[in-house]
Length: 191
Image 1 (cartoon, rainbow, N blue to C red):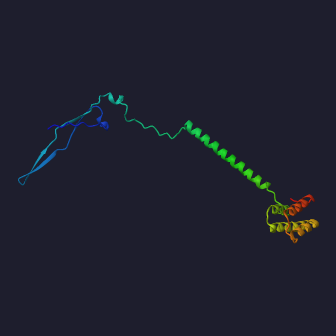
Image 2 (image 1 turned 90 degrees about the vertical axis):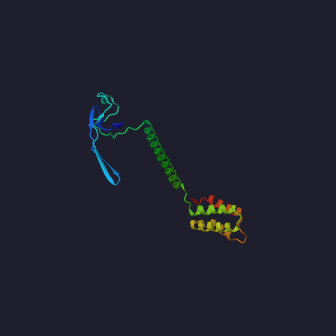
């Protein structure tokens, strides 16, 4: 019997040249009518031959290099990466600028809030009560104005606001507005 195998070269042993192949002897056993018969045979000599010629390994595109080049860890960013980094930086600066502007506006708003003096508050409440229909609101506002004017040392205006607040008939919106105007024109400090 003859066998022929094509073997793919995966090692240097397949490079051009011929090499003998030696296989161990084989033993075959058969049972025949209760008896075992064995036959031992040796393999015929075999020759492994490459289909490469002597010059093929030098012309081959893919061959194992003699020395491995050292790895390189250097990266070079692309123009797109540079552009995106620049845009991200610009957006971060814009966010910081907007945050700063908003913080300045908030600081200015808080700083510019007017803190009303007690007299200015009483005058504001008196004017607001004149716009409402509640007589009780006008009485309370004029009573507060009377106490505040008394604390400020404006006795005559304080008496007029007190009389209007607690007279027999409820104070009218016109009376409340007239008293507020009188206090403001008298030169009293309202802030």
